[in-house]
Amino acid sequence: MKLLNTVFAVTMITASHQLFSQTTNEKKAREIIEKAIQAEGGKKLLSSIKTLYSKSETVMDGRKVNWITKEMVPNKGSFEIEYQGRIVYRSWYDGKTGYELVNGERKLADPAEFKDKADRKYIINELAYIDPKLYKIELIDDNPDKVYYKIKATYITGKVTYLYYDVKSFFLSKEETVENGEKNTFSTVLQSDYKKFGDLWNATKSTFVSESGNQEANLVELYYNKGIEENDFK
Image 1 (spheres, rainbow, N blue to C red):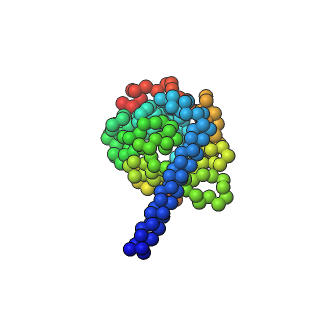
Image 2 (cartoon, rainbow, N blue to C red):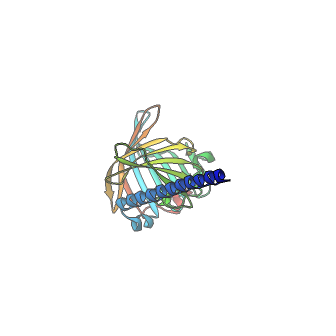
Image 3 (cartoon, one colour):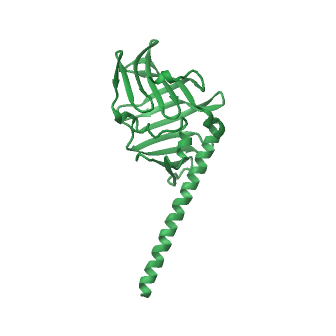
């Protein structure tokens, strides 16, 4: 009986230590992301953003094109490819269903491409990360050089993303989707060259890393709370 009690006590101590460590890592992760929110412009500003427009320059198949994104809370969004002033491809999510426009023809999109959209509530991702109804977050301590904070973010759909925040600026420098991401999404994205648009700080250089070769997109225009309407998602 004495041996059993000892084993039980050791087990409880170990479990308590693991629970305490897990809780501490969750708290630290939240503190880091809250500092990232402050660096981007503050929670009040980020929470006030109801629509967001961005336009980036990139190269596809040897041609210079623009990527245009439009978002509206809670979960509406569209993505367009513009070539020589003409929209050659468009996909969008109207809050319930995803569509594609190819050669002027509207079609239902593959639901797998929008599987994470249904539960989306925020335009700015950091606000979602600190919402326990959407994400479980924890600080991962495997940064020997101490140049970034690595956070594991697990979405309610099961998607797992690792977030790397700079230890000085608290801006996001890299994100890796390692499990159950949306179809055809890049697994690793590098973010850099942050600039201010209005009161919002945002990366102006995004590098999408893949085995077939990296693709770089440079942000040329970004604005929020204007110029986007419901009809943009119909």
